Image (cartoon, rainbow, N blue to C red; front, side, top):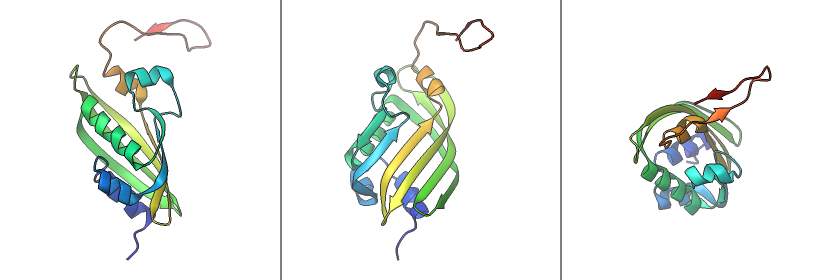
Length: 153
């Protein structure tokens, strides 16, 4: 029996670091966007960020994430779809392996599943929080309020 796009994405989430599993569920030319399309500054902190292609790139991303963080919890709260589009919303708790800082962040995944294979996947999270789990010192100064003033974090 053929699996629905939602079932395919759920199956993917059960083993994103297993190459044979991911290769079975993804198109050979799958596009994977991790957090942004391309951001050189963020890639210095999280080298897997950006756009990549192929099942091997997806596995490498999830393996690397597991090297930088211990995944304490990964909980999809809602998964739904419309035709070839599947969305997953949830939360995850990560502890940085170097500094031991723990953060909890929402996440969102959008997949396009065509003919039983994932053709594209976009993974989003609160990168301000997750990148801060690697912050070892210093302050960030921001000027965002149009009325003026700066804040430091």
